[in-house]
Length: 252
Image (tube, rainbow, N blue to C red):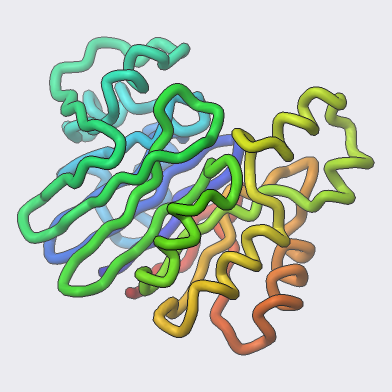
């Protein structure tokens, strides 16, 4: 299984996963042109995707779903509630497959498990892609470190895990009090410390982790990495999913 992040953050999200000949894109929050160019940088074609899986209705994850379907001929998979709640105009859609949060999806020999999250979306899910005995978690926009997440991480071989904010930067930054409370709250995002503690408790099965969905205002890659290193030491393989560019190709 190989994977790379096309972009990760409130300015748009999309993660590519390829396993056993199946090609998946998790979320469609960046433009079709940008997605096509960044996939080409990793010698992959944006056309011929087996599925685009949408995690939730927030615009940074779904804004280009219609474009991806029409331009790249990609089937869309999302919950019915997510589709109904999308605030942006996706345009005409002709190939939409609905699933329920918690359901397992199958693409030939590749299995995608969906996990409901407490994030403040209408019907948010996280994903675990499983192929040939390997399991990759796509875990962003999680709300808080809920019990199902703690139970899931020790079963994974690798993971994208949100590390959204540094508490000090959030408290002293430009966000109003109500927005700070939303981010820190049960339906918001994971802090750097929360993310690092989760990785620490995952155990030895986890080969690597990508810190994802970093806030532009309330975090910085160096701060997120330094926080994780305090919990994990210097040897555990850690990467950052950039807000601005495609990541290296990683193997599970």
